[in-house]
Length: 298
Ligand code: GDP
Ligand code: MG
Image (tube, rainbow, N blue to C red; front, top):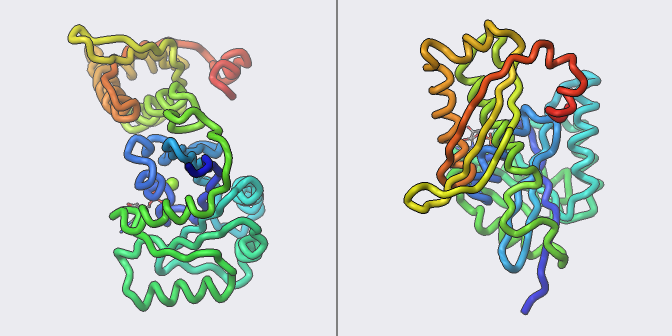
């Protein structure tokens, strides 16, 4: 039997090149809740692909946005450069039509990579052979990639091939996380994020920015028919009584709609039935209160 393999595969590339779509293609649809987060989260969030024989720890880096101003450079240093430090394999994603300047700092950074470095030409379904050849030769003339592959993350073209390629470069090692885990973050974290996302979709003006979500309880139970059921109770904190009224809506219609949408998304995420209870509480000035901020993880 072959030894167990494990390692960190860091995905970099500009927004919109298809990094999240790729992670969904590799890890399954449940991952979309996780992979669609990075733009709004300041942390790197990882996705895990495990079998009995291996565990690949993917991380999709958020802050790689080109902008000549200093703040963005700083963000790039923090996110992208930190992802260069701990990778066993680096994936750089680009797409036809995407241009980098000759003196873009990323180029020299890529040249310095000492681990296997794979160039992914994504969205091959949208490009002509000529465009793909041009893109590949531009990059390979400037950076010594270990491998180059064309993929379509959306159509899952060549993504199985990418996995076998990754396995061929993955070092031997133990699993870093339990094999049934999807991410390094607890499920509670994603559930509160899902509820927040639904609040953003459904309410307007200052409401989304005046609310916080706390998961009060989370437990495995059974339906009357004996099927697994996850019972979740969440508290939505608002700052004023008037906001509570808006959140509730006429006869509670707004909070009911929110609960339905959030429950559906959580069911997709947990891959099972969910009973969701939402409570609204008024906490004046939660934003300034240290104890509360700590409770919300700031
Ligand atoms: P990210 O910002 O790098 O995470 O990019 P996303 O994964 O969010 O993808 C940005 C957009 O490109 C979405 O509309 C995707 O559906 C689309 N997209 C991603 N991969 C492909 C692909 O292989 N082919 C096509 N046609 N569209 C893609
Ligand atoms: Mg993304």
